[in-house]
Amino acid sequence: MNQAIQFPDREVWDEGKQAVCFPVLVNGAQLTCAITGELLLKRFGGTNPLDVFRDHRWDLEEEASDMIRNEQEDDQGWVCFS
Image 1 (cartoon, helix red, strand yellow):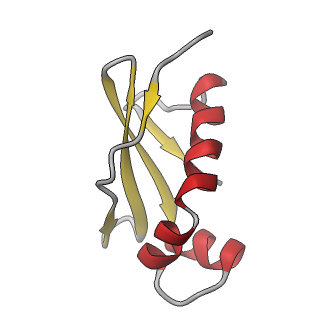
Image 2 (cartoon, one colour; image 1 turned 180 degrees about the vertical axis):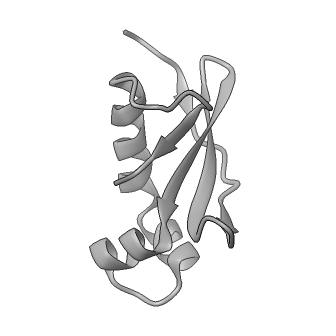
């Protein structure tokens, strides 16, 4: 399936979820991606999850794109890394 996937630069730290959340537009529809701070620091090191996300944005967006193409979003339109 050919989908237009775009990632605006609007990532935020969600204190309640303890995750970096970032929007993605898929054929004009907005979904939300989330990756926990714990997972970010485990995978890439560092001390500030938001900074680590920004340093590895391209790799994480590519991974999110793959998950979207494989229809791995939940019923609420969230794409969550694990």
